[in-house]
Image (cartoon, rainbow, N blue to C red; front, top):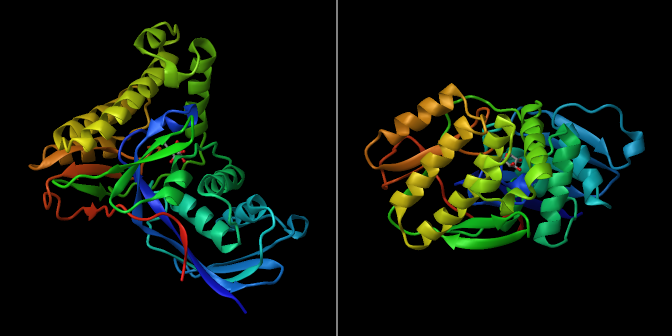
Length: 331
Ligand code: GLA
């Protein structure tokens, strides 16, 4: 009997939110927190018990023999289908990621499970399997950032992802500051219509002015509908902030990184309208703390976490980010 363990990390996005679905740029970091799937290979089903609540899901490999599925069984079935010719597995799943906190716990589950079920394609193909499963499991038309960050992590680095070309460029994180995560405790669910609604607005803007990744401020200003104009302005300015932040990291300019993060938060709050009063208050409070360079909501918004950069030790009660290696089979 073969046993195996597969691990996939969650991610925190330093900057560049709601840019991936129009082929823009983002700058996530793979976390040291993640999800592990371990078990014995074989059989005609995937049967896994979660350490989070002790629940077990039991999904036949053959889609035609499945009844209606609920909860995280939907993710398992979606990964089984997306992998192509998966192998059966009986085992358990453990995670060090908070669920629903905007740190890509679902991407970590999808990627770890795909590896455990025998997917052995290249990293980009693995990320696409996870993205396809996310679309199928919860119907959220997410971009590729979360899954690509989970498969591409490099210790000590952020990942500059060009979501149009699907290229990942590692950016070394210089000394002199810490990345921190603060969870104000407002769970996020993307399954609502808000994410799809924002994505549709971006697509509508692109119908009028062409790809947002190539658009400048003049093209955005030409949009007549004020709502579409604001949505597009967020994406166009956010893409520029991502590239500027990657450069600032290269020169160790943490003040510039912090300024870009604050501008990103304001744009997500005012133009893209995905922040919440609690996230805004958390960012304000962090930015007023001595030693903090900047802070912003991270991920889709509508709840979830805040990411901050600060002088080492300035936020003792926040979680410190350890930029880590991407998904892998463990020995
Ligand atoms: C979610 C999606 C990602 C991305 C972010 C916002 O995490 O899964 O694809 O769109 O929101 O940047």
